[in-house]
Image 1 (cartoon, helix red, strand yellow):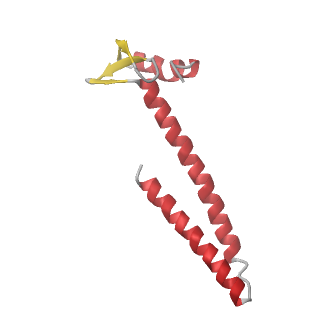
Image 2 (cartoon, one colour):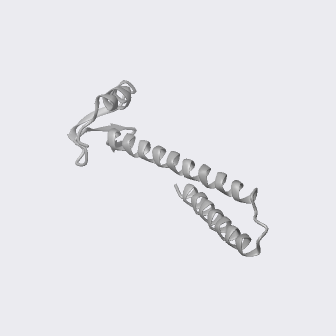
Length: 111
């Protein structure tokens, strides 16, 4: 997506201008939005906003997957079969779910 959207102008650029940031006469090579300078740092507020939004959406998606995995783990734990072969299959699936949950936790910590 090129250039700031109406939402980004209202929610990102305008508040930034009101906060005393200086709009520069240069534009972001990625999105075409004006670059800003504040506290000696030159940045593209639109790209930063989009990146934060993307990370928040990703985190929400991960939380959704994590919740579903936890629910499935609880279902499996509450319905352990009597047959040994079926129990082994059940436990292998539970181990895989636990492994996935641990991987999600590690990913969450790396952000």
